Length: 513
Image (cartoon, rainbow, N blue to C red; front, side):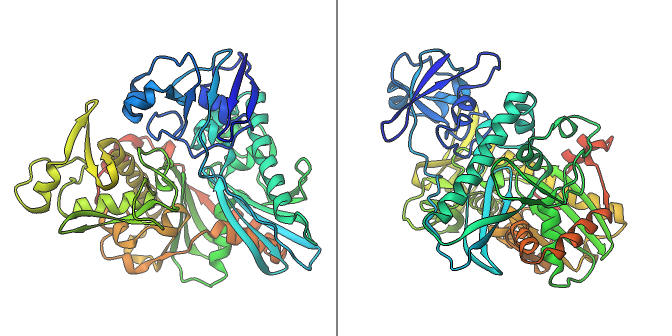
């Protein structure tokens, strides 16, 4: 089966598609390596970022097409690729991907450079080191996003040998390209890597069989803490993995936190697509757990979800005129970041326009609430609130964040219960990842992510995974420290809890339980 792809520059690329594996058109296109993958919503038909235009013979639109795309766009042949199957002879135009990062050449007098990588499910973060000095850094979407935005969709895609090879090649090729871009015409060469990632991303990078992570009983067949030669990449130290769903990203993060000699007990929560928690009771006693959060915190999978950047609303506040977005580098917003959604929902919660259960409160008698109620409408059976800049907040978007909140507090309270301590006994709550780096503490406390009154104990520590990977390059003796940390971890498996569903549902409220 042959498909012709026309990129935004007008260049035509021929794509051969195997009929053996029933992938969607979006998966076929964005795992091909011919075009970079935007941050997608795993085929939910909500984000609209997989939109393509059929040059001719466009398939009939389906419900998601008509919900996301305007009528004139549908008439022009635009469809959501995640909702259609590939067919022989298709000719498809792909719009420009605004998430593509262009890396500038870096010059150094040192011939030996090192690259630290935080390999996340949604994002790839990196830092180039010249000795102890960071001389360049950046982030971009994980190029595997075309296979799905969260871990289980990646593992499902990798269940076949061809799928596993595709995902490994995507990430290995991108790291190789990144190194070439950074060192082009420079005096230096990257001669070593340190890579910190969750277990699934680590296994996919190394081309390992992921069956042990995809189905119960979950187990680690590879635990990291070794130097690996991956294709033509420089030798890479793989941060040690603590459990099947707590990986080198959290081990590296804990290593970074420990450099500042924190008070015990404390919690480190690395919040991205997967939420990983370490409750540190003492220097040699850790309780760990993980929970699937989905990509909403990283601005993925929502109707107007986007990663933070120019033209993206990163926060909202209530003013006499209504909801006012804070937009990065522009006066008009065309997307909302994960933290923007948090601030938006919190603002509406403060005037009781959204209930504890995550529902729009339609009956508003006065003031701002009554004016906002006039902006509520039902589309395809789902309530939507009209926002500034011709965007909307749907009941589905609120539900996604309520699920994130429920998963967060479920895991948070479960590790405390395992240690038989209360939240009030914690000296500090370190928040890393997408949640900790940008979210307002007042929004987290107001929506029940953390107990009321504990905002003063929250410390945003940015990307501790990347910081830890850098440390493992700067001081290789710290690798032994990181490897030792994993031997002192007691894992709590939330999925084995017989009351998982009931407990999770109890946390599905915008209050701390």
